[in-house]
Length: 76
Image 1: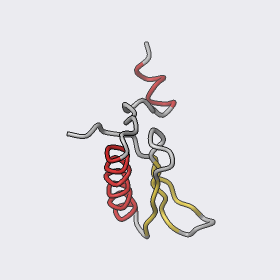
Image 2: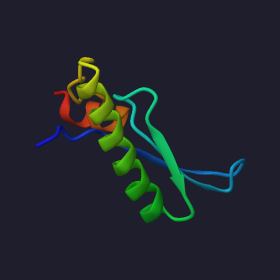
Image 3: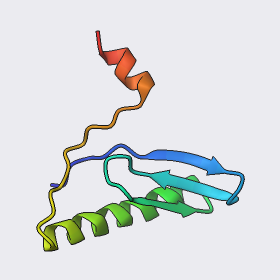
Image 4: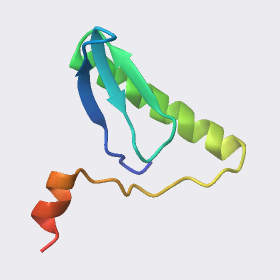
């Protein structure tokens, strides 16, 4: 099973669509007309990113990114 990576999901006024970004896998992002579509697209992008990394023997990073609110909540 592949590691589970944090996904940032946000609306972009400039692009007029939802953006999904994976901070641990640079550059790995996608977009969609709805949050559901953006998440489905970025999951495909993650799979593609990992496949290329494996094919080229690139290191696959462990999931590390945690939003500041999550880190502060569980740091103590």
